[in-house]
Image (cartoon, rainbow, N blue to C red; front, side, top):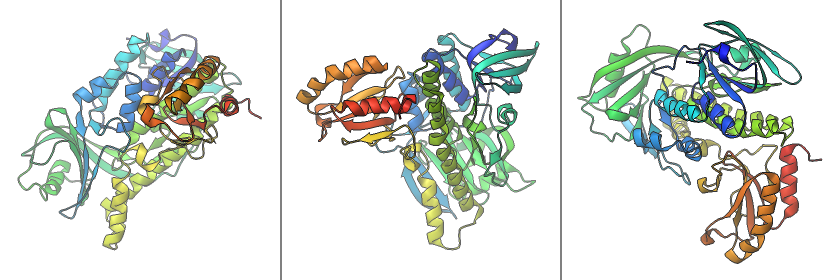
Length: 487
């Protein structure tokens, strides 16, 4: 096991926190040739954590990194979200989203996802430095000096950039002097794993029973369920939750209950996602209610967004102004997640139940926040996406998965008739070589657009540019905007 004292004295990026966000960020950075190192204050990996659902968009990201197979092979394919209240089934929605490669979410414990990610990190020549806590940091013009405390005493690491992925209680946000804002009232929750016997409804679904105290069941492998509830004070959380469940499954009983724990939910968002050379991602930047349940996934998306931008700056392919786009794109999503969680909590609390139509509106919002594709399909206010003509997928939207580059580089995608595309490809190949992009690709003939269009897909799978095919000035303008040389 690696210790803090074994860290290099100087690194490109120091990542604090070895949960899914920190692991994915470190993996992506190392694949992009960046000397990134990952520390965690725990002495060993956690053997149980609360997150369970991996959304369709997260599966696409894992697919791009070649990591999705063990996830979809082991996990439960969640195809439906069922919402019920007052003893009556109210509505259901497909978990899969239109246009997604995976028409389902996956139910799998967070610690199993972390094992997959740690295995890949080791494959790329890196490890997690366990038992290493960030004690303090000092920022300078060209780097961050981080004082770490570990089992073998303190250590000093100088990093050009530091990213806190260390959660709500992590040290990075406090050490960087970043405040929390939009903090919602604390809510007491309980969570446990159990088998439900008998169970006659489909297994491949998430169930939200919004009666007081409420119960949310997400499926796990081996016909297990992770159960979330908000019990009344000084009550038996398992027994109280069973009473809710039996309104819908009269003969149901919990068996083999494990990992019962109580926790306080602190919904919040960081006032800043960046303070000079320090960034926040995942739960260090935003925490939402378990009723919304997107915290882990949004952290993975944060890491995917930030990794290629840091790499471009460190490889001197872009000015560090590119990094401002991280907060511009990701912070509105953190706000949307918190709003959605608050909406779900209002349903369960009974607030907003003045009439059936108001409750319906709240529940419809709950049903449409399951995946990032649903409640924000684009980065409408991003400073680094351009629309210069053409047709098809708009800039800032998620591109079809097949358009993304598995080597985490930009890619030009041509949508035109074969003859027209063939005439343009040699030039685009030259441009891709000059810009350091992946080789361009053509969509299938039935994907031809009128007018013929070129999309530039960013390393994180979003469309950065849409332009008329042959508009060389648009390509140059896009590169200039992203690199910081425009104007």
